[in-house]
Amino acid sequence: MNERWKLSVFTAVCLLAFPGIAGAQAKSDADRLITEALKPSPIEHNLRHLTDEIGGRVPGTLAMEQAVAWGMADFKEAGADRVYTETFKLPNSWAEGATVVTVSSLGTSTDPKLSSIPPVVFKARAVSVALGPPLMAQHIPVVDVGMGTPADFKKAGDISGKVILVHSDVLKKWADLFNEYLRPPAIIDAAVKGRAKAIAFIATRERDILYRHTDAMAGEIARLPMIVVAREDGERMGRLVTSGHPVWVDLSIPVRSRQRM
Image (tube, rainbow, N blue to C red; front, top):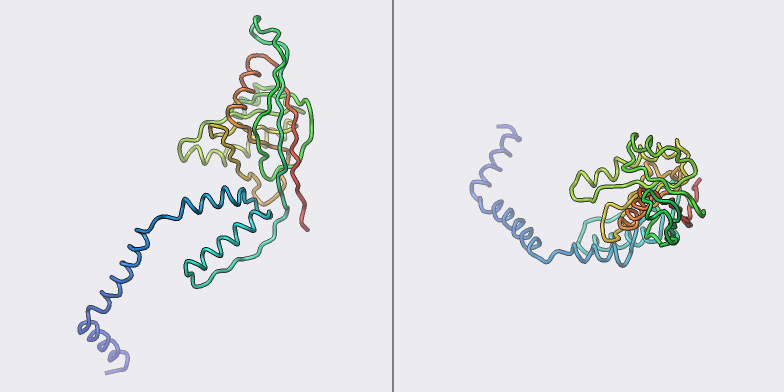
């Protein structure tokens, strides 16, 4: 009888003689998991801390550093065997200032009864899309390009030097969320090709909720300035344009970006 065969026989005998050992261990692990699962969930507390107390966590910002430090501390407190971070380099740093968008409209309309209206001026709630370049400009014409399809751009005509207003569907399902990532690249390409001044995406969330994505694929600075406009303000802009009133915007997008060598 060789040694390997002896060891196999001995192991089998032990398992047959003491079947409760493995079962007790498995039960103990299951009980621990059940106990943890029945405890109050920390998700709401964690979400509130990340969104309200730390805020937006764009890579390279102080908020991102605070979020990483908080995450490490929580993993250690939870009893993780080892907690560590990995360093990486960003090609660019980016941080948004106080984005201000002022909309104005005056003049002609397709409705003869509204051919002359009092000046319309209002502030649109908006945020800059990361990682866009800064822009400080006044009285930029706005052109509505609908959903931003090739047919929409063709119908809009000349967009050179203008802010293009891009509509969106209200986010209700997973497909809508993926569209927030999949639609912009082609729209941005068309805007750059047409020499647009900037892009104003109408927010997919209602009630003034502004949620933005980072359209950069490799940390590069975007080719032109972009903003997300509150849905209610963006649709108002669109209605003014559609009714025949010329619409302009004053844009103040004081982002801070720096190329890292």
